[in-house]
Length: 151
Image (cartoon, rainbow, N blue to C red):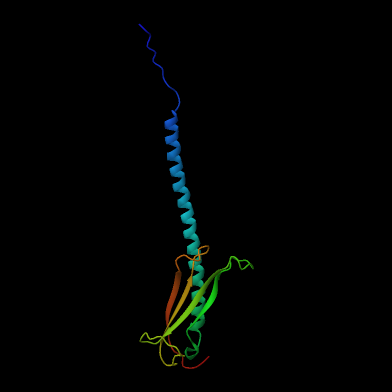
């Protein structure tokens, strides 16, 4: 009769090691993609904040303007210059001002000075690094009361 040896195998088999590598790689890819997505969302929110600041500054100027002088317009703007003189890192967009009467009709000429007007300011841009991506927009809407005379 032969001796039966009860051997304990120490360590991992090659299959167990490969399974562990696949699991760790999957977890790592998930973490990295989450971090990249979060970084992208933070950048988009920074762009939204800068666009909203631009819209707010424009609205403040319009609110201090004598109503018959307010006109709708569209212009190209730089939403974010990244604090540099270089233009290659600028984030271009458009600023649009729409002026409406109290009934919601778009005014194409200066409004009369004796009525409330509705002013809508829109800032639109493509996300940085993705000029063919979804067009983003921030807007402000305000009603402006007439003043009795020009300041």
